[in-house]
Length: 403
Image (cartoon, rainbow, N blue to C red; front, side, top):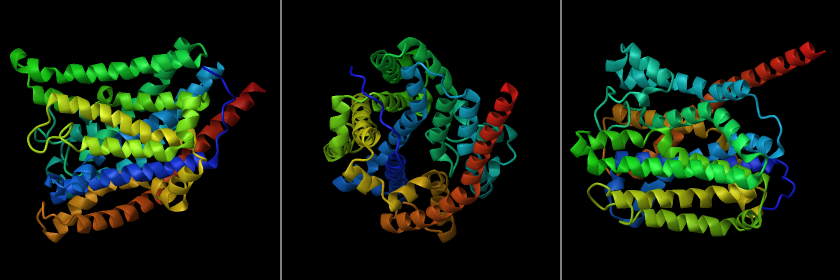
């Protein structure tokens, strides 16, 4: 593999990635509004394609893998010192926890009053460890407490944050500065995630024989890091390739429209009975097809932005001020949109499944953006500044001690 000079970081790089976050959160919100309004049950192709907007979550995971692993990839390839583990974990905690801790009591007080006195549950929710309780206090088949269902993906992100510095150290040792070796090692982690997923899926067949409830095992596997690690690994591989570009990455970055058409085709296929049943449960074969398609779509969507954020089409569509602004507040939208949906139905007294998608989407988008902007302005940015000041103080202290 050739070793051209690594590309310098650019403002457009961050702008385009922020824009991609905006796309991902839009897909996630649309999926949840589809479920609440009943539109997900309609056979029309456009609703079925929109309903597989669940791909927004793998896109977020791949972006995390790309952005967070890239400094470690650079250090591994250059045989230099990696980022400080303490500083990394501090930054991650200050990025996700304060805003989440503001939203959590609101969701608990207004939609989970019967659980407020459960101190054990509070401890699990506050620390993002509730997904490791295999006997949770909510009905089987539910992904979490009311208004807090989407937080499962945040628990997966948190697990990745904790694991990444140690995983990166092992990958650096294995790679010995060789990009090919590093990519093979990441590929092995990707394969391990796939094998884990297939293995757990086999429990559907052997579970009853062994006296194990297959639904419970399958359901919880969906919301743990091993199942989703393939998307993080995909982003990590892109981080390596962004540091050491190849002809293939240059071609992908130069023609984002082609990659995005591939992604749209993948979404369309995912909405067909190849991977999504028209009625009834998803079969194991459909599940595996969806898993393959989700990886293809994620790679097609994220790849051009990771490899060539300055490409004119990429910059125009994803790096413009509107998309960048939406991307900056996307975390707040993620935290609050489910609360807004539940509040809308509680305050209006309207029934679910009234097929009023555009009305509910408009209300959800408006109030989620308001709350997200407040969160970003008064919680997220101050917390990030606090983290940067802390890093500056530690660096100054270290420099003083070294004199």
